[in-house]
Length: 302
Ligand SMILES: C[S@@+](CC[C@H](N)C(=O)[O-])C[C@H]1O[C@@H](n2cnc3c(N)ncnc32)[C@H](O)[C@@H]1O
Image (cartoon, rainbow, N blue to C red; front, side):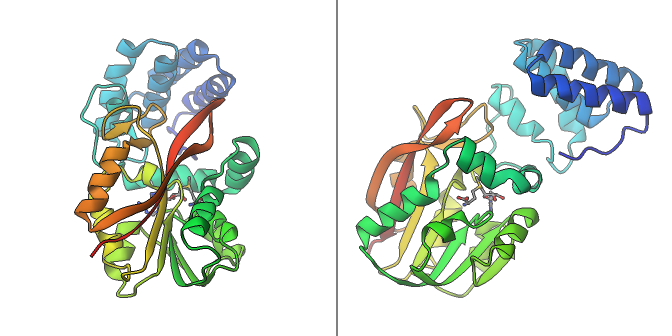
């Protein structure tokens, strides 16, 4: 994340060194330097959060907690994800949704290396798993109008190439959308939240997709209702979630939400949707470990 200056040159320099130590995995040295930056620039939000992250990584949660609480009071728009960090440590209620500014900032930062890191290094497969499952449900079908929620750089459109005549995409992150635009993978693009897009459009879509997006949405009831309202009777809604090991809605250390199968089925049913096909598969790797997910195709029930 691009961090604005503390106003103190020495604090800025200590912060930069601290980040380098954090990236290199020397958490104790990073924590010391972040704390030294705070001595020069008390209350400086990036250093508060950096120190807390380093202390948590070093197994010193008790020391991190007061820093995160101070950061929360200063993280007005939620850009630093402080509320999520506290919740992931069990120190606050899990919010129903992450702060929009946090998700936007995360992907604006990530956009220029998203495809290489995720696909090449982390074996990301969600769009292709979804395309396979859609193919199983409707072999060789052509969809007249598709909508890709959280389209990112456009990998879902790539995976469904030639299958969707008019494909619209929306995403919270302007930088991700700029890449999708450059790739000319969609007929229309919008920088906006998925639920907001769905409630503003009067159009219907015979295919709605959300590949690795619901992990950044949290509670799914409002979004599923908004999708259902835009699907014709034979429309399909195809999405992935990370599968929770237990429970309905879990916030992970990664600050992504995981969802249980029972929760997915219940919230779909409450929105007037039902599962047509559901598969368990590896979505990608996270810190070397496979992330197990649910790959789902649902449709309206009448
Ligand atoms: C992991 S990326 C996946 C991108 C793309 N679907 C793919 O499979 O390559 C998640 C994307 O969802 C977007 N996103 C997260 N929450 C969103 C929301 N509430 N509304 C719209 N986009 C969202 C992020 O900005 C990001 O581009």
